[in-house]
Each structure stands twice: as structure tokens, then as C-alpha cells.
Image (tube, rainbow, N blue to C red):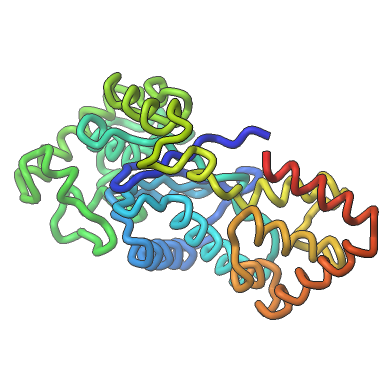
Length: 324
């Protein structure tokens, strides 16, 4: 199983998105949306991340985030797990919320920061049902769309504390009313055309000029033993929770692993701990258990595997798949 490349380094900029499992809604109401933004704000503060732009759609979301500490994977793991746990508790459900691993691509800040920000802000009128709407109505809808960082970009009074507006607005003359009007004008012009960002992404992971793409490839992809930077295998230390669950479900014949019990649940605990990087508390939140129960479950599985040859063979097979 090939893992999409995760390139991490200090001050890297990313466009990140995630979609609901089976394309189902991940926000049932505004309470969910407010909780999502609260958790996003807390995760940003915890991991020292800078949020430039965001938009919340019905069944997916987009963010434009910068990682001064080079820790996108850790930030996203904490953020996704926390919101999933909160959503599941509120709606009395268990299991996957997202359809799989979050998608991200690296963005060259100097060349594409503003363009990606605008691409994110245009999402609410790019969905089915808005194609026949007049340009004027699209402009009005976007400016009034509450679950986006766009209102704060065009109106000082609508700024949110979790968003850093200055970097994008610097391209339009600074964080002032004139720059905000220029940004709004550009958004309106973009509605007439098409921001063809995805066609410019190299290898499904990099958006930048030729020089930037060459630098990234040389620094993080071609050099397998760079002394100043960790090797790609180190950068991508963990799998996503969804991939680990998919592997376990397939090998154990379990349809919904998070609903399992007994040995299968202990396997889930162990593999999420070892290969998704989740701690006992986070695993417990997913399974509705105390963290100490998770620790004991992992211990019991180790004891069982020393006495059960078939179980040991199964665990080895799952681990080999998780290790790629």
C-alpha cells in the first residue's frame, strides 16, 4: 500500500481538505460548525499553526494552514480525532466520520498564497445548484456566507481571532480597507473565470513554480539521506486512522472495526497506537472507553499472541501491511 507523500518542514504552507465518509454531512447544524471552529482554534494554538483561510461546506472543509514547527501530521491527527470524537458523542454514533486520509498539497507561499486563499473562498458557489445563479447573486452570497474566512477579508468588523489575515492582504497593500476592497474585487473577477489550481499541482502534492518544485524534490524526495532533514520515511511516520482501520477490517473480516469487541477491538487499539500515532486517551475517546482500559487491552493482546500461533500470524500480517 503506497502512502501519499507528506512533506513537512518549518513554515511550510498547505491547502488541506477532508470529506465526510460516503460523502455524508460532517456538520448537521450550526452547533457542529461552531464546535468545529472552536476545536480548530484550540488545535492551532496547541501546535503553533497559522490559519490563513478556511471554508466549511456541508460534507467537507478546506483550510489554508502554515506550520512554523513543521508539524502538519501531528496537528491534523489531533484536530481530526478531537472533532470526530466530539461529533460522535453529540450525535450518539461511532465509527468513521471522514471517508479517508485528509488530502493536502504543499503551496509555494510567494507565488500561490493569495490564489489558494481565493480558491477556498469561492467554494460555496462552486457546488451544484449555484451554476445558474447570477454573478451579482453569487457575489452577495459569498460575502454573507458565515462559515468562511472571506467576510473577515472584506470587512474589518468580521475578522476572526483564529485567522491570520495580514499575509494574504499584504499582496493587496496591507491590512487596511483599500486592500480589502482590492481582495473583494479580485474575488468578483474570479467568479467570471476559473482558478485552475488542481491542474498545476505536481505529483498530487506540490503547487509552485518550477524552481520551488525542483527545490522540494531535491530537498525532500531525491535525497534519501539528507543530514539536515529527516528522510521521507521519517517524515511520514504514521498512517491515518482510516487506513489503519481499513487494513484491520480487511484482514479480520470485520465490517465496522470501531464497533468490534474482544480480540478484534484489542487489535484495533494496538494498531492505532503503533501505526496511527494515537495515544491511549485518544483511542479511548474513539471507542468510548477509559484510557486505562485501552492500555490493558493492548497488554492482553500481547499475552494472547504469545500463546496463539494463528493470532500471531494475523498480527504479523497486519503489521507488515501497516509498515508498507
